[in-house]
Image 1 (cartoon, rainbow, N blue to C red):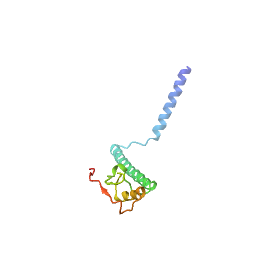
Image 2 (image 1 turned 180 degrees about the vertical axis):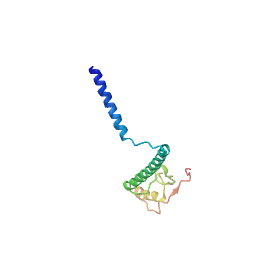
Image 3 (image 1 turned 90 degrees about the vertical axis):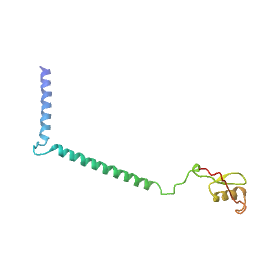
Length: 124
C-alpha cells in the first residue's frame, strides 16, 4: 500500500511537471512555416559566428601589437652568409663593417690596414 502511494505521488509530480512545461510552450500556428524559420535562425547564427571569429582574430592581432614593441626582426646567425674573412685569425663575418670592427678591437689595426678579403666560396 505504501509503495503504491509512493508511486502515485511520483506519477502526480511527473504529470504536474509536464503540465507546467506545456503551459510555457507557445501555441502552434499552422500558418507558420517552422522549418523555414528554424533554417533562417541557423543561417543567421552561422553568420554571427563568422563575425565573432573575425572579431576575435582582430582582437588577438591588436593585443599582439600592443604587447610586442614594433622592432626590426633580426636574422639568426646561421641565416647570414659570412663572406668576409679576417686575414689575421681566419674568422668570418657577414659584413665589411663587422670585419673592420673586429680588426679594430682584436688586432688593433687601423681601418686602412684591415682591408677585407671576400670569401669567394659563396654559399647558395
